[in-house]
Image (cartoon, rainbow, N blue to C red; front, side, top):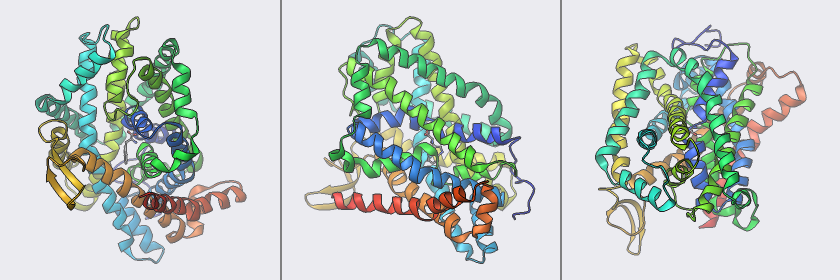
Length: 468
Ligand code: TRP
C-alpha cells in the first residue's frame, strides 16, 4: 500500500521522465487533429475560451487527483483505488470508476488507432510526393479516397495497433523515455515552422480572430464538447495519468509537474490551431469540416512550400509518434491491472486487449465507407431508435464511441477521481502527497479538487441539458 517502494509494473527514473511520459500521453491527436476541428465545428473563440476554462478549473485538478492517487498506492488504477479506499475506511466498491475508466480507455483506443492510421498513410503519401503543388480541392479528394477504402484503413489501423502493443508488451517505462526526449521538442519545432507558413498565407489574422475572438452568445453551444475535449486532451478521466502516477518517484512535486504537463499540452494545441486556421481560410476551406480538417489543410501547406515534401513527411511521422505515445497510455491501465490480477505475462495480456480494441476499431473503419449508413442513437420523427440503417440523423459508429467516451465517460470518470481524492482520502494523505510548501496554496488546491472541479463538471452537464 502506501509503503510499497515501487509498482510491479515499473517506475520512472525521475520526475522528468514522468513529465515526459505524461506529456507524451497528453499531446497527441487530440491536440493536432481534434482540437482544430472541434474548434471549427463549434464556431471558434467561444469554444476555445470554454476549453481553456475547463482545463484550468476542472482538468488540472483532476490530473492532480489522478497523479496523487496513483503515486500513493503504486498500483494499477483499480487496485490503487480499492486499497486506498480500504485504507481510508471506505468501501472497496469505490474503485468501480477505475473499471469504467479502463473500458473507456480501450474504447478510445479503438478509434484512435484508426485515425492514427490515417497519419501513417499520410507519411507515405507525403514521402512519395503525392501532395506536391496540391490545392484544397485536390487534398479533399485525396482524403476522401482514403476514407472510402476500408482495406487501406484496415491495413493502417492494424499496423498502428501492433505498434502500440509492441511498446506496451515490452513495458512502458523501458520503451518510452528515449523516443520522447527527441520527438517532443521536434514536434514543437515543426509546428512553429508550420506557424511560419501560416503567416505567409495572408490570412493569419483571420485565423487568429477565429480562435480568439470571444463570442459570449455562443458559449453554450459547445460547453459539453469543450469540457469533454479538455478531458480528452489531458488524458484524464480513465486512469491513464493515474497509472503513470503510480510509476512516479516518491519525492517529486506533483503540483509543479502536473502544471507543466497542462501548459505544454495547451501550448501545442493552440499552436496547432494558429497554424491550421489561416491555411483553412486561405484555401477557402470550411472550418466546420469535421474530422478531416487537418488531413485536407496540411497537405495544402506542405504541398506549396520549399522542402514541403520533406517537412510534411517528418510532420506526419511526428503526429504518428505523438499518437503512439498517447495510445500507449490508453492500453496501460488495463494491462497493468490484469498483470497484477492474473500474474500472466504482459505480452499475452497486451495481445489479447489489443486484439479486442482492434475488433471494435473495425466499426470505426467502416463508419467512413460501407457502414456510413449504420446510425445509432437516432431521434427520428417516429421516436427514438438505438439503431437504424440509413436514418437521416443519428451518429455513425465512430461518432457514437467518440460521443459516449468524450462527453459522458470521461467527465464521469474524472468527477469520480477528483471526488475520491477530495472526499475519500484523508486530508493528511493529500497534504503529504502534494507536499506543497505554502499552507495557503494547499488549501486553495485542495478546494479546487473538493468543490470547484466537481461543481464544474456538474454545471456543464446541467448547462448542456438546459440547452436542449
Ligand atoms: N490526450 C491524448 C490526445 O490528446 C489522448 C489520450 C491518451 C487520452 N490517453 C487518454 C484521451 C486517456 C482520453 C483518456 O491525443
